[in-house]
Amino acid sequence: MRTSSRSKVDPFIVMDVMQAASTAEAAGRDIIHMEVGQPGTGAPAGARAALSDAMDQGALGYTVALGLPALRARIAQMYGEWYNVDLDPARVVITPGSSGAFILAFTALFDSGDRVGIGAPGYPSYRQIINALGFQAVDLPTAAAHRYQPVPGDFAGQDLAGLLVASPANPTGTMLDHPAMSALIEACAAQDMSFISDEIYHGIEYDKKAVTALEITNECYVINSFSKYFSMTGWRVGWMVVPQDHVRVVERVAQNMFICAPHASQIAALAAMECDAELQGNMDVYRANRQLMLDGLADAGFTTFAPPDGAFYVYADVSGLCADSRDFAAEILEQAGVAVTPGLDFDPVRGHGTLRFSYARSTQDIREGLVRLKAFLAAR
Image (cartoon, rainbow, N blue to C red):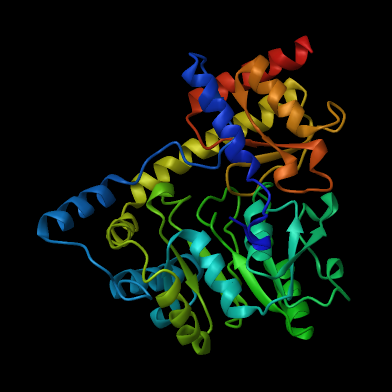
């Protein structure tokens, strides 16, 4: 049976690394996981309790496509608490994770053949979803001088239908400040480009609060998720904020593509938003892990990287240590028992010389992983 041309997407390399690490563990090896961007903690206790109560009360069927009204209202309230943004809950769309939000956003905004700019390095699934939907992903190579974030000059004259940015970014953890975000939004408006802001790592910041695009404009799509700060990766629930006149457009697409986000996950997500003490405890772990990574990677011999402003990654230049980051990652897994992600996942052109290290797991794991990495490089 034939397959479609749109199905010819590249593999998500980090998932291949996870599989190799799992195979090694099944063979009895102890592996330290620095490859996956998944919190080592589970959903907050209050979220689990709320779902248990709801399940005792009756069946959890479909919700409306836009999501539970109470959850949409609580998310809008959060924008006031976090950013002093007065957000109409009607503009909030609950989605099956941020992945579902990207599919809805791209489908609502772009036509076949449209060119969509994404910063490189960047989250690899942006490129694959865009291409699979019949659009064209355009990598915009970003500079270390701009902390691997796009600037207006990167897409001047590119004839793009839209720009997608992420702050804090994956894989670098770097953020756009208010002037940098404003400059991108203004440049997009001047070129009649749609602006999409991936804010999935908001809440996981260190020295300063991340800027939401909604502080600057209502003419944008903002995408977020309960996966990272709220520690609910497997629950597959996220949200999107869209302009008022796009709500019905997105709703129609969502009704047909997804029906709704999982009802159970929406109930848990609503309760998770009241679990601040537990979530801030997770942040204490990330802060400790971040400092361990910044010190430990440099001590081990991984010396070139932009210190992350948020998220839980360090993106390191290893071009002086290897010619191919995928082979290098396999060597580290085999010899050191540490799983890391090759930069080729995030930048197909320059990623052969970079690795991403995640510090989302326990502090004990991070400490042990750094010991192993130092020993590996010393013996190499």
